[in-house]
Length: 292
Image 1 (cartoon, rainbow, N blue to C red):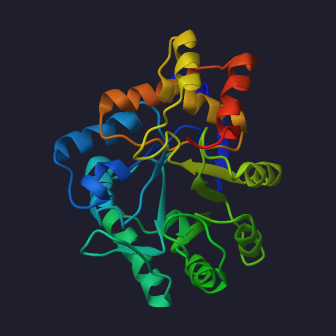
Image 2 (image 1 turned 120 degrees about the vertical axis):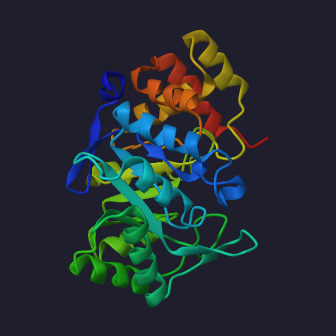
């Protein structure tokens, strides 16, 4: 817990959370579909995360589907007062393991109620609207109608705060004209930095930026420069990649995921790793380099 405190904290809605949390996506089966091969190990990872001081868990009922939320409830319910669980709606899984948009009014209402039921909560602290205009990345499109559905559920007391996932800068601005937005969750890491300007804009507004795939996703970050910096600092490349994100901006909240307790501890230890300016200069150039 002391190591986690070294990364500092940042507001997430009306709570303040440590800047390294835990992403539950990898607890589901291959392709984020079906149950884990070792349910006991999945429960152990969740419990180890909370015991280590993690107070921010990211999940969704479309992981599995329903798998990660049920695991979280089995491992951690009744939840401690300091634990913040953030979920997502806006997508459903097909029987072919596809990811499909689910923006309709009843789809969104049903997804919120499914999350409440499977997590065992009376209200969801933060619900991110996952934008699915393009399954593979952000794409323009109005989010007014689905966001108004979530704002209505917020007025009903089922949602406390609303965030966005996979959003463009224009969509963030559109959303903020409809209701308060407490976080934006987009792909961002050393090698994928299209959101540099958006991240800085959100920092000025005091809004959390939550990078998904902070370690590269299903294809982990591979960079000679990253490996060389890690070797000099006697750290792993993944620890350095996370430390770079933490030092990139104070509004960054990390949610690295893993199904291994050993990897969990490795991820959390990045909170105590401080990168010297010369290392940051080298790492900054990774994102500026043309893709291999």
